[in-house]
Image (cartoon, rainbow, N blue to C red; front, side, top):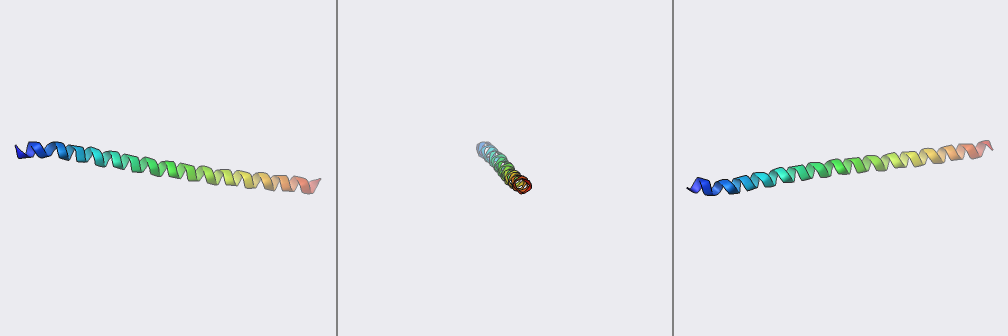
Length: 59
């Protein structure tokens, strides 16, 4: 009887840990993607300004 009572708590704990793990993994990937996009945008802006600078020098 005691084991059956503790079983739902174990199950809920397992659900909690799984959901927390999924949440942290998702958050990690979102952060990674955002950082990548930020880096990519900075690279594009730098490239654009360098091209603009080169074109101004040619005229």
